[in-house]
Length: 181
Picture 1 (tube, rainbow, N blue to C red):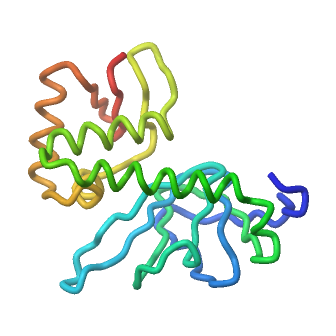
Picture 2: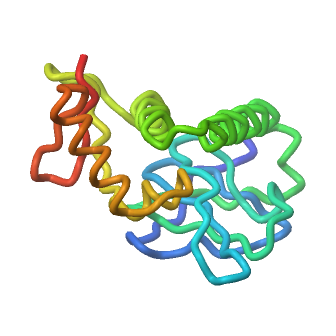
Picture 3: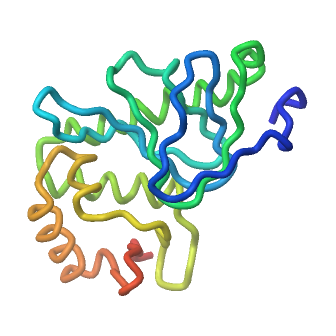
């Protein structure tokens, strides 16, 4: 992290809170997971991405309107003023790469493939190794997964059950998902 950006300026947000939209600041996430989203003309939620530690998010990185950032748990973030953005080029490049990976996932034609690719992406980005596989240990509802891959909650539920029956995932009662090793 840039020495010009002080961790003393870290702000804490509760689960469900939205990071304030600011055009002269970006948010550098230091802890937790944030979902970026927009709304369709019909009012349906469209998930744009999931972001975590060391990711930069903010209105200035998107031309989509409306654009919002929702905390999917407790989040800590630093508001980085635009005068310091040049020091964050690595973070900005990573943001662009993640956006392209998500676009690739959503463009797959088979729903099961989309969901599997999203679970792999989430496990690689946010997961941690445990004995049974890779644990995605933050709560994601079936609706949030459905919104992320442009399908229905029912289809996600059926596909997760199928993945579980095939031994690809474990779903403990804690609302997390484990991708089998």
